[in-house]
Length: 280
View 1 (cartoon, rainbow, N blue to C red):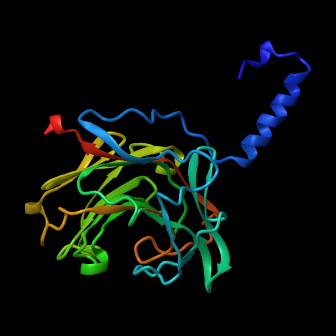
View 2 (spheres, rainbow, N blue to C red):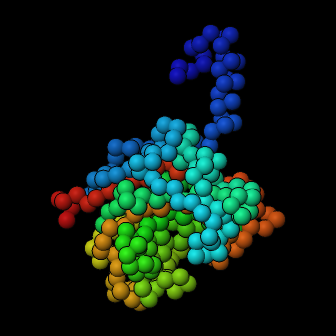
View 3 (cartoon, one colour):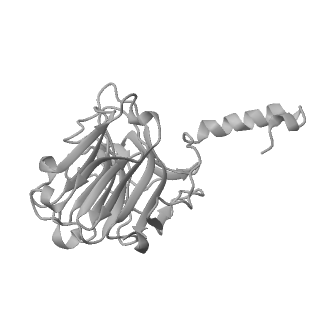
């Protein structure tokens, strides 16, 4: 669009009002990202830039239900647009306080199981997390064989978890046989100022044979190798990606009087890379 100074003066107030109206209904905007660029040594294998107006059901499956998900969580996951939608060039996952499916909260959980499953690579997303006591956003991965071998033998790679009571801390975690739940192989990193909900951040893992590395905004903060975990290394087979926003649970605790709802998890993109053959 041309700057206002090049338009007739009569149109300027009208355009200003339209712009304000659009801002009132769109999620917080993120600076432009280069969809075609790739980190050195990697080539893009799969991505969702969340363009258009609808979730791409050829890339994502919405899991539904309200059974606590093994963590005594309080939400009922739905596939409704109230809880999961694409708007303003981003995926919006919204947690709401409402009675649904015998639960007092709703939210959404997406996975690429059966649609995109990959062994090794760089898995990256640019996300603006929500905030509040009992709010629990996550970007993570599960072994594609979970239906056959169960959890934790399938393996779990938690790329990003942030719980509302620790808004400046980011956790990167590995779950496997002998090191799962509260005994998982985990490490956190903290912001020097502010909280994660203040801005978008890039969360990533680089997963290669015998090693997984966690990054926040390009900064390495955690590494795992077979000799570092107290059990079998179960990370040499395909995994799928998940995005979800939980409410309550054993780890974050439940919402309290300070928790403001609804809360939104905004995802600018998810990108999956493979190592370029020339890079070894």
